[in-house]
Image (cartoon, rainbow, N blue to C red; front, side, top):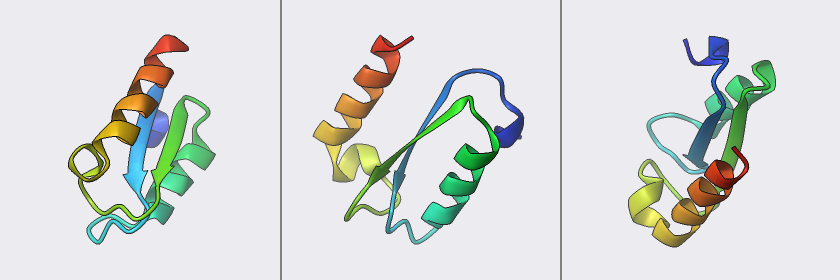
Length: 66
């Protein structure tokens, strides 16, 4: 289960995701300090396609901190 992971995990989540509400990502991040949540405004279910540059930047920054 996602909230039980101990591995540093990045969640990149669209605030307007119609399939999985953003509140699910917020709850997971609040329950587990291993999770970093990066929210994308004006974004639905597929952040890598909808906001490629911001998605790439978030992933690279996350990996650089590791």
